[in-house]
Image 1: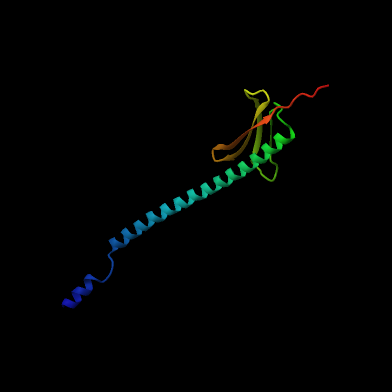
Image 2: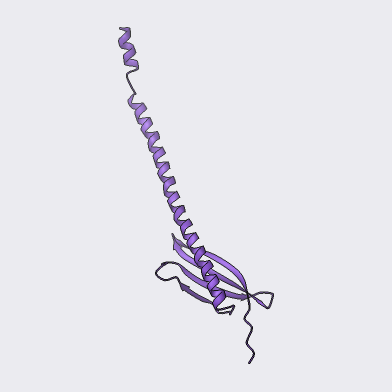
Length: 131
């Protein structure tokens, strides 16, 4: 009789223990999936930031080399290769008459609000050519 009592007490898990274990497992899995989704969103945002920064740097170099520092505001996009990315350039005078501030902004849609990267450089002002 003693032997059958010992077997009954250590026979296995109760239904309550199994339900509690499954609840803990479910909460842990939900937390892990939420973290994974957040990680994917951060990776996408980082990829957009790197792309936009590279595009802004290239556009800043191109515009400061080709057009100089005229005060014309220009804008455009990057074509089919980078859909959704747009750029704008703004040139403003500085306190030093020989220099102009050139600001290039690259923007792209992400979520509810558009994101943007802004790069600023200073370039020599164009001198009017003498007749």
